Image (cartoon, rainbow, N blue to C red; front, side, top):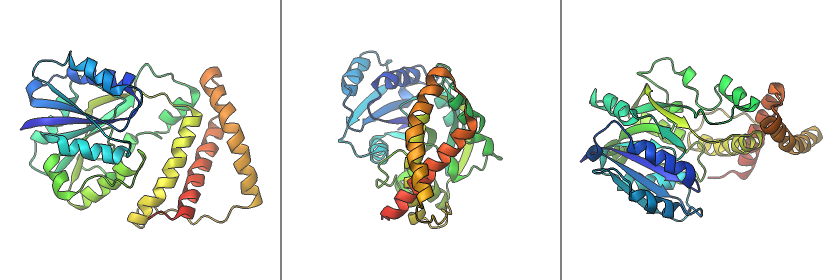
Length: 308
């Protein structure tokens, strides 16, 4: 059996995915001891053609496999990759995470050091090429993407840090204890849900800050507000599954004032996004209000929907 399988779900990101693959080709790890599995969740950007081109330059001894499915969401995409993997350890990697050359080695170093049921959480930071807008610096300063600063003990990490952009776990443990819940159709909360369930079954999460990946994904005020809305919406699903895990507050019915606020923020998010990205306008006080507003708007929608 191979030591480790890098499982990458993807959807319409062929350009950055190609860079991710080449970063994995350059790993300081024996090529016949790992494999790369790409699962395409219904891309329409000719991802498959790019993979076929890349196949011709895969290093000798290394296996790159590609699977396609109709769009079902990242949870179902990862599940397929896990089932197809031949490695003893599954590395769950984002399709926009460029790996340092020692990434696989750093993951396996921790796995080989213990017989415990563990997951190894790697470190992710923004790629140097990504434009540092005032809004992005605001997110970075407050740790609003990956909250590594909240990890007090790298030997005992909370399920809340089960970030599937750069985390590894033994395949047998996943098979015995559960896969991703495919009711999560977006890349939001499905990883924390799995982390919560696996830690309840005895999984320990260890953090290795030397297993580094670089997040290559442009972020604007508008795109983040859409994401935070989805996060609020899907947080109500995880709360329904695991009551008390998030302690979502009871939200009152929208008043006239709330409706006016809804109109105001809906109008302002577009120009603020443009002013931040193209002109460097820095409005940290407004960013905080805007993100809170979209989070609670998503929660309200989720609670009203009562999805089961």
